[in-house]
Image (cartoon, rainbow, N blue to C red; front, top):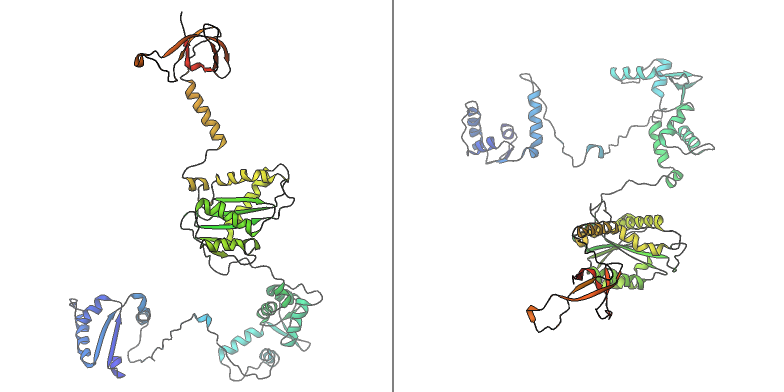
Length: 485
């Protein structure tokens, strides 16, 4: 505050990250520490000398410059009577490496290695150099020799490197990189090869990298870039059957025995439920019919559809989606990642068909089985089967059905009590059909006796009455019991 008064400041805003100090300066809190009372009294004497003084509390993150200066002041001991120059703080809106500083050095027309040459040959330093620059020049010159009127750089392998520059260096890079035996190597390898050929200049590696970067053939024949240029934009599906992806498998050669060559596949992004159908020829009318019959009329009107730019999804198919108010998201050309869910489903279905088909033309018969296997298998993104997410329970597979039937049979057979009835035995038959009987509630429960004429497999029997008249229908053995005459 005293420094502000010296430069004529009349209105002052004081910002601090200590809530205690700011509150004491405002007079909201009392100063109890004896050591702080003299400072507080001095503050109260300075405040009336300004027209207006405000004290504001800010978080520590917003007061980093003041913290840095306080730390610096606590680390440096200033002798008594010594005045320091004011410290200028520059705040930039970009990192320091983004600022490009261009230094225009005067061109004196001398070669790049003139100072080194002059020192080796005459032992003279450039005029106006300081002692530290002279030491650096002596150390640098120890790495060079003059031989045959040319400057060479010493090498640890014994082969000295000829120092070149300017046009000569550019010619060497062109010849080695794309000359008769030029393999168009990368910048680092180009610099190493130039060194092995016996040439050197101080900015060789940087210039080689820049030269290769500007080589036209290296650019057009460079490897494809697989690193994503931007962050992943996920497509969310808030509820089941709200977003579908649709794609076509085909043309399939050879065609199936029924002439089908295409498989239309659609997948729900939420449950991973798949619908498909095969066609001999696929048109926009058939795609429109598939969307209506297999998706809209079964699972309701979805919110959005994702497809590629194939001609199958234009025309009548696009009109159907527009009629139902369904949003359409088109992937860019040769960008299958946009519709990766249906692409993964296509790959899985093709893999199943490859392993289950007996011949190349019966895949249409295995398509429903492949679809059933896909729906009842656990999908990695959801950790559950599409069937369970759609119906709330797991599907009963054939192997489970056989086990269930065996368990039922085992439980039923425990209750079996054989009646040991043979052909020719006299039996009574249980009355199950409603028959008028004047005895009402007191009518008998068994009719007979009858004679077993024949016992058939499966527990059925053929009866005759005592007069030899045969029954028109068979009777199950559980409705018979032995009659004792």
